[in-house]
Image (cartoon, rainbow, N blue to C red; front, top):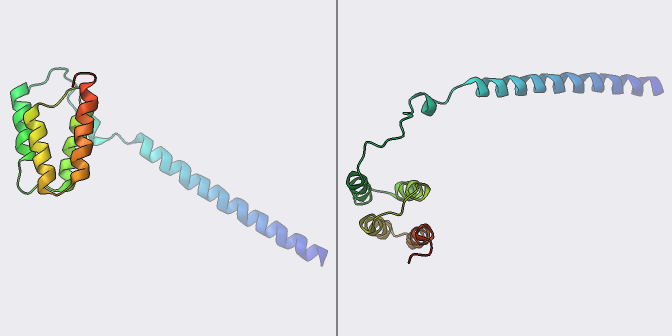
Length: 126
């Protein structure tokens, strides 16, 4: 009886080691494959420090984007997130267009969050 239990334990131990080694090999190859790939964004990214867009063109682009009639909630959030990530305070006409977009999609909470973001960007200058 003791010998049969020992045999079962040895078989399960061998099976566990085999499964664990195969899993580690699969994990290792998947990690190596993803780290060796170059993201597409870095391949086509322009490394110029100078913007080719003027401030007026930038304002007009965001104002037109927020004034689109078919804009949905995700697109409004994406544009607001992009604006929040930039080192600038949006012009009042962009803020007005964004708030009107929030009204069109009926998202009061998003409008409040955007206003809070603009207030934080302004710092002590209210």
